[in-house]
Image 1: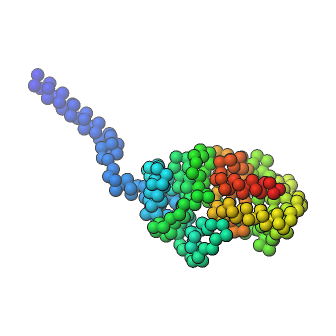
Image 2: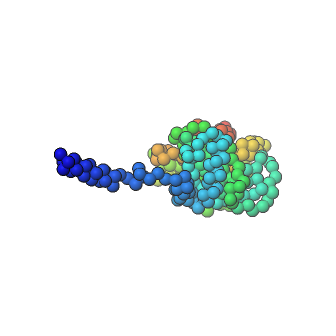
Length: 274
């Protein structure tokens, strides 16, 4: 009986050792808070174009405090190094900003189907929410990112004050609509087998042009510069790019109802003008 008991104990012990050895390391050694933070910092560095981890943490903490969302549910989805003026690139309409060169960051954070845009200084000790550009209401289909750099093909001598370019979609047609400082609206269509010359579709008075441009400024259109509102679910969506002065933005046309309110207002003003 003693021999059988000893054999049984030996078999049981061996099985326990083998089972323990087969367990994943994470199940037998929990990560410390420092290790968890180090992992988060590494993920931030890998996904945010060199954004310092300290800046990412400060932005997440600010969102968690302001919008009552756990920082653990927030992700840095994109970031770009920027040089700001004294208003951090967020001037009020017709306001004066100190002309200084302040190095910093533009940071896009996502969480709970929302997106926030923050402008910070270099170390994140100063930060500003870009309310105009942020998607503070849940938007399951819309994503927020940065536009690609300009290709330099536009004519700087052309007196264009506002322009829209619609391209893509199933038909792969590009439509370019331009408003110049004289109030002339032209439209040009480009397709795989078509390249029309620009045609005049409307003439506006100088007063109409000035009123429209002032309304665009009141909607803080310049706060939207370099931003792109898109969906990875819609490869056949047509994309519209709006340009005014030094500001250029892009959005997926079928999702324009989910865009920030002030951008939607600019779109409606432009459509009414045409």
